Image 1: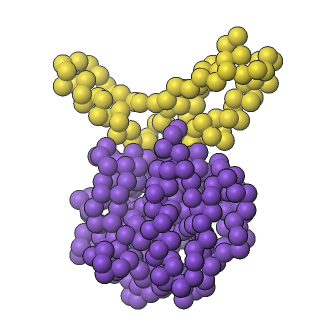
Image 2: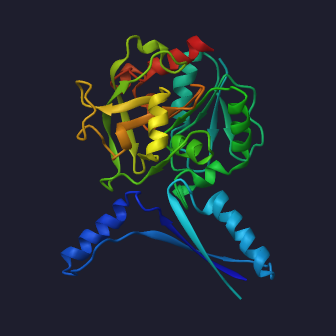
Length: 80
Length: 228
């Protein structure tokens, strides 16, 4: 199975890189942007074929390493 | 005083801190590679600055999960003093020894310069030699030193006297201009609830000898020696 994991900063956590991107888009003439937030995208290929077990494994990976839950949220999509 | 310095792939301040400690203690510093599973008996463990694991994933995240850190955490919980400097601060936060997180500098730039710090307490093993406290000058060099914690955690840290150093103007005022990285409440370093674990972004080892242009950092090592 494949896990597609998105790690994003929590609401209320300042995202200086997102702010810089927002500013750059504005300077390129793109209007109507309320906010830009930057995050990470991670793919993990798993040997596990049981979808429930695979998701539980990936959640543990997110909690222990892939995300810092002090400042980040994560979302998992399983495929295959 | 027996001091140990943890060395990760990408550490680059490990030898500087070892020199400072050897000069202070008159004894060799024990250098401990990240793949070791045990830290030798120590009166101080230093997690040094650098770019452990190339800052992959998040600063300090990979190093915090390396084999040696399990024993660093265990020994810290048993009362061995731990000092995390710069990347070492990032590592011990990720290892759960201190609360909060260090994020990309608010100005997005790598900041490398001397900063002024207010010594918030002088009754700890790290700061007793600072006398009446006041303002000291110590260099920073980092891209991710923007200290973040939720309001409840910040209030708890302040209430429990766990803010070790704040970025201030030379006159001691904690202004926004004196904050090099956007850290909340100008926090440059914090203690755990026992005062035996300190994480800080500035580098005391970089101003610990007159030849380096200042000695304000040396007093931290003098304090540790006096406490050991």
